[in-house]
Length: 439
Image (cartoon, rainbow, N blue to C red; front, side, top):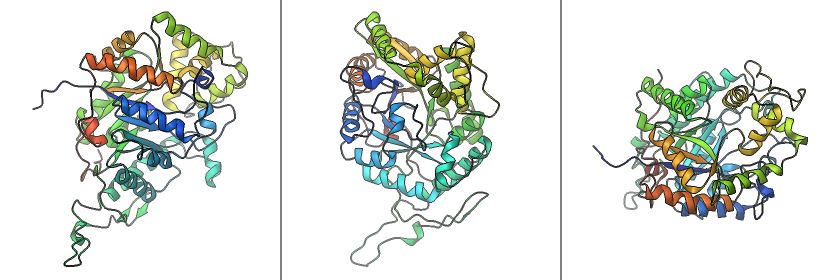
């Protein structure tokens, strides 16, 4: 049994204009999410910091009042394929919706990226929460929440099944005999389900990781079950330590239902670090970022993050309760409960949402930030963190150059990569024959 000290895992959430809604206005900040050189520089910084994962989200609608990086963005699987050529170790994750895709295509795409990158690909499963997305895919309306997750469960089963159609060593390529594949190591899937009928196999050998890493971020009961059954990594949305510990314990407990152990799933809460030489300097940075915000699009931004329309309510009034069954449930619940607990107005919630899109904001010196991350890590609230720099590249440089060394001094984070694949980084076994069981 290994006696190695447990260490943090770190990912970076990449938005070229910064995770803060007005981060692009900060001195020296990048102003584009659609410029390859900007994203390549972020990738280089992440790898210099020995991060486990670089993550690129996606969206299928364009709302003029939304976050700048959501207005103009690269298709994420295309982007991480390119990034694989300028990096050597860091994992590369991308979002693809199970509501507006086909399992066969998704299986091929991520297996391809895993081959191209040498075993560093990760698929973030989303069911898509924006109702307007349906109109971009020849549909009149979006599927209801629970139905989306029923589809997602089968979707993941099919993708994993297609990845498993090829056994290791199926390609022989014997020039003497002329045998190219061992047909006994390739099989059809022959999936006949409620939503999908897929024969298979995919026309691609098994990828370096066996199966690319699966990421999930849903916090509703259905999302948690999907994560417990199929995910390797979960991005969580939390604001307070005790709430985070309870959510962490709940998710880890659910794994047993599917024959899994707690070590088979890494939970990474999202955190926006605002770093200064002193606590006062860090607060001044946050205040400057907040000063760039305009209330003109406040209600649009809050509505987008809450997942329900608040445009008819006064900014200085209380936050209305979410309608039953609407919106991004995790964000809606966390943001609404925070607002109610702290007696926040819609304007207050706008400031919080604009700062970190509903995620946790951590402001202070490198030592203070490392202290807080360590507390969350050692007391059972996280296996690491998904870092959301408010702007790039400067704020990310600060984290890598100031906070990461502090974590390394404490023995909480690696000094160098010890493996070559993303599964190596997360301490996960190679994904072979791991089609998910059902409870």
